[in-house]
Amino acid sequence: MDKLVIKDRLCKLRTEMKAAGIDCYLIPTSDFHDSEYVSSFFMVRNYFSGFSGSAGTLVVTGEDAALFTDGRYFIQAEQELMGTGIRLMKMGEPDVPTLKQYLEQQLGQEECLGFDGRVVRADDAAQYEEIVQKKQGHMCWERDLAEKIWLDRPALVHHPVFRLADCYSGEGADSKIARLRERMKSEDADVHILTSLDDIAWLLNIRGNDVESCPVVLAFCIITMEQVLLFADVREQSPWNRENRRYLQEMGVTLLFYEDFYGQIAGYHGKRILLCRARISCRLGKELPEDAQIIDRPNPTSLMKAVKNRTEMENLRIAHLKDGIAVTRFMYWLKQNVGKISMTEISAAEYLEKLRRKAEDFIEPSFETICAYGANGAIIHYSASEESCEEIKPEGLLMVDSGGHYLQGTTDVTRTFVTGPLSDEMKKHFTLVLRAMLNLRATSFLYGCRGVNLDIRAREVLWEQGFDYKHGTGHGVGYLLNVHEGPNSFRWKLMPDYEDNAVLEEGMVTTDEPGIYIEGSHGIRIENELLCRKGIKNDYGQFMYFEDLTCVPIDLDGVDASLLGETDRKRLNAYHQEVFERLAPYFQGDELIWLRHATREI
Image (cartoon, rainbow, N blue to C red; front, side, top):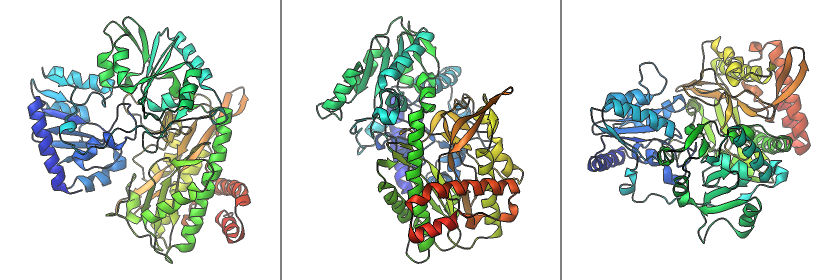
C-alpha cells in the first residue's frame, strides 16, 4: 500500500481525535464478537496502518503511532510499516514495552483514551481504565472514529445460514442446551450471555459464512432457564429461510433483531448473569445493569465443543482422509512439474484449493493458504500478493500451510516440500523439525497433563541445537468451526490471563507444528493434527496418547537420515506405512508408484 496514503489517513484520524477530545486512540484487530479473523467491515487497523497481518493493535497519539504484534508477524510488519511513520512494537521482545506500559507512557495527566467499545474486550478495557484513572483522565469507549474517514468502508454483510445435521454434529441442539442449563444450575445462574460466534454456532448446530474462513453466523445469544434468544439478521432479505426459522422454533429458540441485543441485556436487573469477561466487549460490560450479579467463568460451551464426541471423531477421520488425498496429489503435481511449467506461490495455492474442491462435502478453505517459497518461508504467517509473489524454482524449499472445512470437520496441515537441491544446513533444519514433530506425537502421558506440560517434547529437540520458534507448538481445532480453538494448546510459556491451557481430554484435537525460520533464507514447518485418546489404565492412573488425523507424506527428500536416531526412524516409517495404507486405494498408475516411493522406509 502507498505509504503516503497511510500518512494521510493518520492525519485525518488525528483531526477526528482532536475534535472528539481524544488524546490517544486504540484500534485492535477485532469485531463485535472478539473473533480471530474479521470481515472486511472490521479491518480498521489495516486501513489506518497498512499492516495486513491477522493480529495486532494500533495506537495513535497526536505525535506518535505504534503497532503492536507478535513474533509471527515481525518480518511482515517491518516490511509493511516501512515509511508510514508507525513504529513496530515487537511484543515479548526485550526492552519492548507491553501495550499497557506504552499507554501509561503516552497518556498525559487528565488526557483521554478512546476506542470503539464494541471491539475491545471488557477485561482489557478494565485495565485501560485503571491506567486512565491513575492519570486523572477519562476513557471514551463510545466512538468509532473510522466512520467519518473510511467513506468506502465495506458493508456489514450477513450470509446464508445452514443447519448442521445430527449425523455430523453427533448431538442435537436440544441436548446441548439442556447440558448448558445444567451447568448454569451448578453456577446458580439465571442468565447466560454468549457473544462468541463459535460457541453460538456449536450450541445451536448452525453454520454460516459471516467471518472469512470461519463458518459462523453473526449473532448474539442469551440463554435462561425458560428461553433461548438469538439476535441475528431477521430483516425481510434475511439469510434465515423458512426451514431455518422452523428449526429454531422447534429448539425453543426465539429469533430477534441483531441490533436489539444491547436493549435486551439492559433489562436483566438483579439477575445472576454467567458470562466470560475475556470474551465479551467493553460496551457489553458497561451496559449490564449495575445491580446484576456477574458470574465470571469461561463459557461452558468452550470446553464442551473442544471435546469431540464419537460421531465427530469418526467424521474427522473421513475429513482428513479427503484432505490428505488432495494435499498428496498436490505434492505429486509439484514434484512432477517444478522447473517444467511456470508456477508461483499464488498459482500453486490456487491449484491446491482446486484439488480440495473436488472432494465431496468440501465447503471452503479453513484459512488463507500460506504458500511461501524460499526466504518467504521465514515469514511465519506469510501471505503472497501480486507484489511479493515468488516464482517456485527447482531448488530450495516451499512451505505450504493450508486447510479445509468439510461437513465432516476442519483440517489444518503444513508440509515443507523440497523443490530441488538443498544445502546441508537446510537438510539439518528440516530433520530437526521432523524429529520435533515426531517426538510430540509419540508422547504417552498421564491424564491431567496440559499442553504446557507437553510442549517441551517438541521444543527440546530444537533447544538442544540452539533453535526456537516464535509461536506455540500447537492449537486446538474446531469441528467445522474456527481453525484455532481453545481451551487446549501446546505452549511452553503462557501469557498473563491466557486461557488455552486446559487439561487434555479424550476427543480434543490439537496441532503439532514446530518450525525453524531463518530470515532471508528459508522456513520449515511440519504440522499434523493430533486426536487425544485414552490408552491403558493401571495402578498409576489413566494414560493418554495421540492418534494422527493428518494423512499426508512427509517429504523424505529433505531428511538427513544420519541425524535420525533409531526411534526417529521407527516413528517416521510407521507413520508413512499408515499413510500409504490409507491413501493407496485412491491412487493408481504412476501416482500410486510415486506414493509408494514417497512413503518408503528409511
